[in-house]
Amino acid sequence: DVKVTQSSRYLVKRTGEKVFLECVQDMDHENMFWYRQDPGLGLRLIYFSYDVKMKEKGDIPEGYSVSREKKERFSLILESASTNQTSMYLCATDGQNSPLHFGNGTRLTVT
Amino acid sequence: RKEVEQDPGPFNVPEGATVAFNCTYSNSASQSFFWYRQDCRKEPKLLMSVYSSGNEDGRFTAQLNKASQYVSLLIRDSQPSDSATYLCVVNINNAGNMLTFGGGTRLMVKP
Image (cartoon, rainbow over all chains, first blue to last red):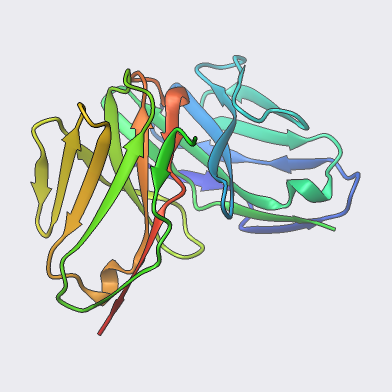
């Protein structure tokens, strides 16, 4: 069974702080994704990666960056957190013949 | 117009009722379709893929109408444990980065 682990379940940060959200998957999948989910807006893709050291912008990359130094780990970085980045962040992975599986999410509050 | 549209609900039904959700999508090139289930404050989980011939999994039946560009989910003999938000997911190709999520339909099944 696919396991996607996000390092924090709840996180509270202050405006201007640098924030790291970590995600690890154990299925040796090439593809990894970061989404955010907001009421009324649904799930929106921030960034994705198809391979180590590779990254592509999703629909809403502004204010975020990512890092993929190892295949199993995909990090989302908020360089300078702002209150409009308060959201639920979901990491996901998929592979050939394997549908998208999500981590259990990180609920980030920026005050 | 949203790319994937769902009635947000909530659908409040008594236990044992049959309930149907529809989802419409705008991109006629869409190739893959899924229903995900999301419990409150949890991550989305794959409920079922939707095949062009329609498919059934126990009390759940999914249908696809490509000509009219809609996807449906039917739940028979609904149970309180079915209470959740159901997300319609559409994929333009077979890459995870082209997944588009509907906003979800909330279902409440009362005992």
